[in-house]
Image 1 (cartoon, rainbow, N blue to C red):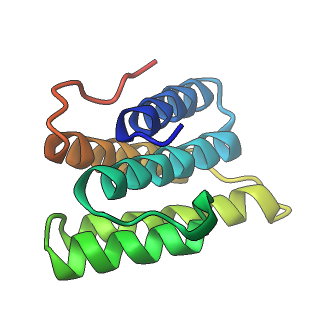
Image 2 (tube, rainbow, N blue to C red; image 1 turned 60 degrees about the vertical axis):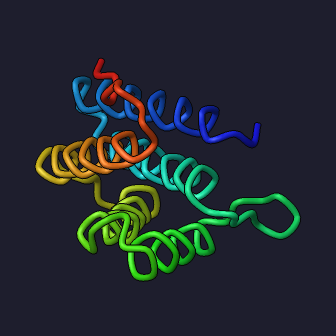
Length: 136
C-alpha cells in the first residue's frame, strides 16, 4: 500500500468507523478513529501532491504532520492553516482519549467528527475525488 488512493480509502474507512462509534456513544474510540482518518488522508495528500516519501517507507505521525504543514500549508499554500492545525488538534484529543483516565465526552467526539469531515473534504477536493467522506 503506497498509493494516494489506498490511503484515501483507509481514511474514509476510519471516518466511517468514527461515525459508528459516535452513534454508539463510544466517544474515546470515535476521537481515535477521527485522528486516524486525518492522518491517513494527510498521507494521501503528501503522496499525490508532493515528492515526499518517508525514509524506510514508514509514515510516522510526527513526520507526517510536519511534512504536511511544511510542504502543503506553509510552502505551497495548498491548504489553509486551519486545515493544517487539524492534525495537531486531533492527535492531542486522541492522546487524551486513549491515555487519560477520564472518558471523552460527546461534545469533543462531535467536534472531532466535524474536523475529520472538513479535513477529508479538503483533501478530496485537491486530489480530484468527487466523493465526500462516507458517513455511517
